[in-house]
Length: 394
Image 1 (tube, helix red, strand yellow):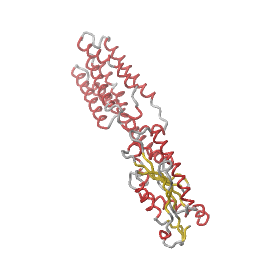
Image 2: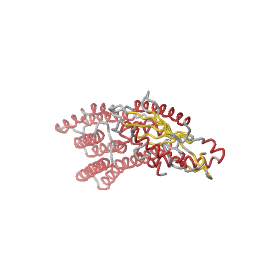
Image 3: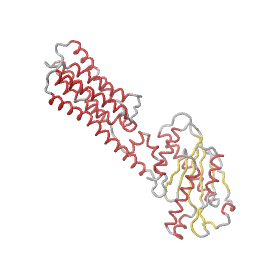
Image 4: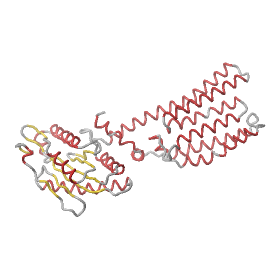
């Protein structure tokens, strides 16, 4: 993976965007989890009335009854939570909900185990830790997963010790205890390993899908996403969008070949990337079209444009290529932007910048035109022959 592509990985922390791209539907998952919560409540209810369960022990029956009564509200809560975000980030929109749910599930299951007087039946009940472990594997942070595995292992081992103290043969106790440890911890470990590798692979595929293979810059889709993300996350209201292309690029391909044309595009990508800091967004939109999104005012973006067009782009011999730029300078509305509003703003700025780029071409190429807010008169910078150091433009 190239350095440029690796640098784009941080863009995929936005779970909503990722889930929209992969068309993930997680509703059936949360409904399944909610159904399992209800089923566990039903098992607890049955345990209240089994001869080898809690009959004859009023305190245990009351404790289990209270635990069972909470399963319906918890099931409803789980059915309303956006599990896709939790799966991708391990963070719930309601802070700590995913961790609290694991603590709740372990606690209720422990109450059920303690309430059951028959240790063999209690060991069967402990196997449900594997179901909790499936949730743990996908939806909580690593330290919570380890804590759950440690806790469930302690409960299983305690049950084994109780079974042995009650006169059960030691080989039977060892077999049952080890089998439960394999079931509970093996389920969590296997599922967590799979979901971790799947997420890593998915992130890599998303990066590749949003990256231009030739230059390592973002492609059009990646650029729009990254620039809208920048608008939504940044506190500044300053914003500028630059569009650029290589002057007479078709002639470069025709006269020097596509290999030289590719080299020119790679050189342009290096120039654009080198002219901005890590907070800017740079992309290749297609062909010889590029774009930059930055949080600059007109003074800052003018200096940026001058820096870009002053860089030489060799095409062979004494000939050089030049870049024309169209620049839209605007402001970002205050407050939090929705993804739709940010995307709409980017599209409007694209139209303004493209129009300014057309004016820059008409002004003689190798220059830039700045367009401010709608209604402002575009301002062009005249090509400076001194910048070309006496060499003939391509």
